[in-house]
Amino acid sequence: MSKITIEIIKLRKKENQKLTMLTGYDYTVARIIDACGIDIILVGDSLGNVIQGKPNTLSVTIDEIIYHTKCVSAAVKNSFILADMPFLSYQISERDAILNAGNLLKLGGANGVKLEGGAELKDLVKKLTQYGIPVAGHIGLTPQYINSLSGYKVQGKTPEKIKQLINDALALQESGAFCIILECIPEEVSKIITEKLEIPTIGIGAGKYCDGQVLVINDLLGLTNDFRPKFVKSYINLHLQITDAVIQYKNEVLKSVFPDAQHSFNLTEDCLKDLQMEYKTK
Ligand code: KIV
Image 1: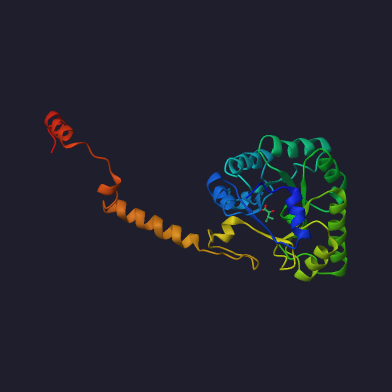
Image 2: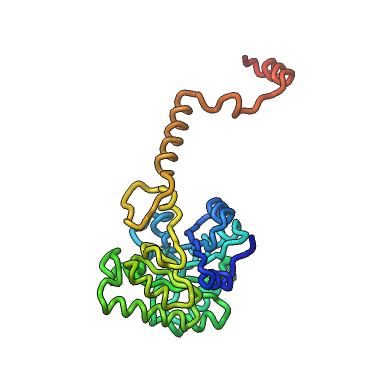
């Protein structure tokens, strides 16, 4: 296996080979994801939800993304590390955007950045790519627009909205984006976008026609037992397994079953005898 680059990512589409992406936020899990040969690890601002317990991603800061990108970078050998640009880290000024994106590479060790938005980001995407910062686009349900979108809803359901999504995708490609995330749109719409683009589309809730798929790792692992969107597939129920393990541990401690001899350290017999003499213990 070798390090995944934007060249390899773009080649996959030409060779009709699917791309795999998962979110990752910490060293231990990123190490597993990387070793499994997942192409791209996204340090997503979804960490606001799954790591910080916030109701949305809006409060996530650039420093928090840099911190988690560093944790992921420490583990990764081959996967492409994509870091999310959080809300207001790229909208205020071009200077801020370049500095923040640059720091995700420079301090975090990311290989590229992801921005939510469409044609309005054309100039910025062009600038970032010109300065050596690979950019992934993200259109459809863009969680940073939660307030404007009035909730987490499937996007691209009317002819005008579909046209807008196609234009956004083409604009991002023209500006130099190396791939585009399509979130929560009907699969017939992602099929058209995927066919129109030369760069890969990576879907989440966007159906089977995308060039690749992404899931939030906590969802894939079944770590939460609350609301699960229709597009989420959990491959294991870790919530249940962790609950069982923690309860078993608690009961064993309460009953003095743990730690047993196998998990304790002992002195040599001579040393123990001396100790019992000196301290008059049994
Ligand atoms: O932040 C994130 O995890 C994302 C994915 C859901 C695509 O943007």
